[in-house]
Image 1 (cartoon, helix red, strand yellow):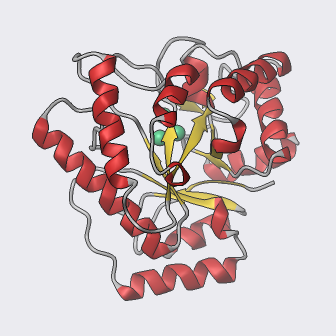
Image 2: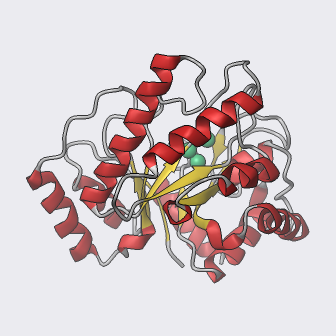
Length: 279
Ligand code: ZN
Ligand code: MN
Ligand code: MN
């Protein structure tokens, strides 16, 4: 089983590897830069070397690492300058991942801001196709969304339709977030629910395209579209559902990454440990 959590790069990017090792992770996710701004300071040769050296020494499989896009870009944006900035940022992140040797970049699909799904998806496909031209081995992973108003890509059918339009195909994959799927209406509370949900995913997207699993329990109820992650087993998905997901995914050797909160109830050290205990 490859399992870990999102870790901070605070201080320097190689600290992410220390943080992952400390938490006994065999997989992890980072932001390659401050996720709250548009600007990304360029990676120095030293940053890159330190990150790669530490990763090698850590024994964490390079293919169990991923980066997540910053928060501001909106790849479905109808605003021309917002759209352009978003595409530029996606291209930049694909390049940064390439330099760091990170094979996967997870991205949200954005919001059409009321202009309709069809238009939003057209822009999204254009944005992704542009970034797909970057010549390196980084794969862009489309993450299913929580189904918030105006968002694109919460149901697997639509996700699959978007995915199939992307070229070159080898540059694209999918990241499934369990919290987002649950709050968009996929019942992951029981073994049967999990089996049916993944059957639906297989039908529209294909398991072979699933490269990273975001394992998060949900604070909200099924179908509420609320993007609030919760501690593994303590949310509305619960222990039975989480366990069934972990078993199914680890059998397929897909890296599991937690994006759970850190609060008085639990921290990420504990959530990682609990996932290991559930199997
Ligand atoms: Zn995400
Ligand atoms: Mn996620
Ligand atoms: Mn989320």
